[in-house]
Image (cartoon, rainbow, N blue to C red):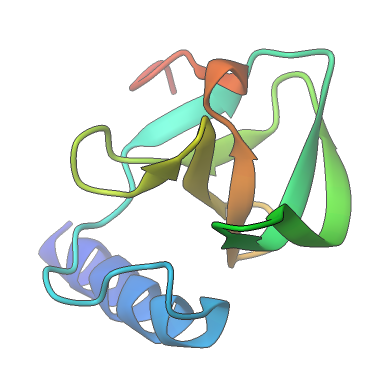
Length: 104
């Protein structure tokens, strides 16, 4: 289990570097397991403080397994930095679409 957690933390750090300046890389925290609780949730590559989310990656459906650690990963104007466990990449979804923490 320790190897998986360390690998996830390493992947999170590498992914954070590619997402852009909005994701902090000061303290790497593995994403807490969550699921998409909205019928659908747009998943964006980045968040710009002046114009909002940018670079639609894909739309996530209800029940998609994602990660977001409340209090550690940023939320900008309701857009939460989120890890998509299915594709293994970081992006931003509406915070209210995250739920079911530690349910799987």
